[in-house]
Image 1 (tube, protein in one colour):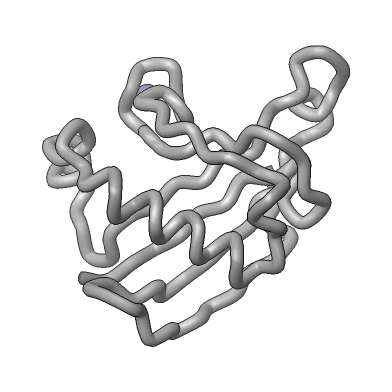
Image 2 (cartoon, rainbow, N blue to C red):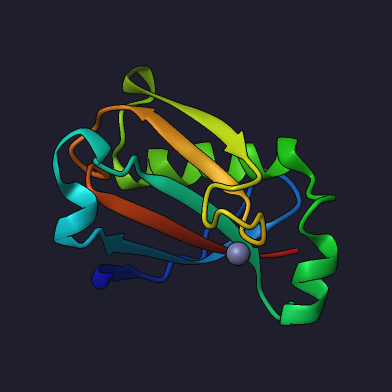
Length: 122
Ligand SMILES: [Zn+2]
């Protein structure tokens, strides 16, 4: 996947976390083809978290918070709320379950054919 947009935004968050980085990655051609066209994914990672901690935490994510981060991030990118829904999936990023995230259902041109990587700081 190639990075098409790199944005770093320090947004004052309404609650408890700050979004420190948003990256959009373009799906490769194979992923965009035909019936198996990959749906956009949104994954949220915690700044400073080591890979080991990530693996330990992967099944105990505060999904409500992550959903809010996901919604507000896409909103800030200009994705129309009425056009998309987010489905939490333990296997969003990888079939082995190491990279949970949201799968985007619906269509919006801003994220079509892309995955979104959000970094937050608590
Ligand atoms: Zn995996």
